[in-house]
Image 1 (cartoon, rainbow, N blue to C red):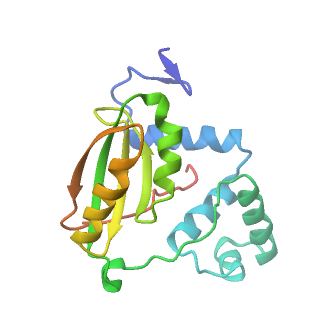
Image 2: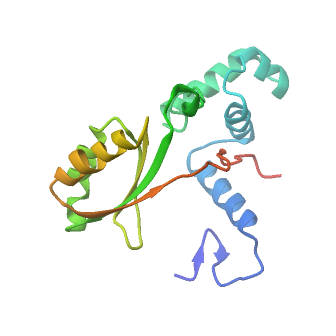
Length: 183
């Protein structure tokens, strides 16, 4: 399949940014999203605590319109709530580790994922391509807690063949994808 979203995938001179914008436009059209919906998403990702009235003023619509649009985005499962951005290190969570998980068989993903979800220190799970089958992020207070999760929790899950652990020394940055309407 040489074409995707009317993009010649062999066309080298198209930038990644242009491809992402085309993909966002395509997704927006399939989900019946318009420019205002994308502007709302963009603004809320920047400052989730902004009131609907303030956001409405910024986008030149009423607060009620913002409320209706947010409700629509929630019903479409595009907006899945809001989160508080907390500096976990300030609360004593000093260890962030990433673990590549090799499964005995890829068909075991669902059962292993269910068991991983029960471990509260695991904050993210991705099913991936490459050397590993799964990649998880673990946040712990100290090395002893990480050891417990790795040795006493992960290694006992049926279907996990082996793991490879990477300890983060520092998070350089973390940011949201910049979702914005096409110009």
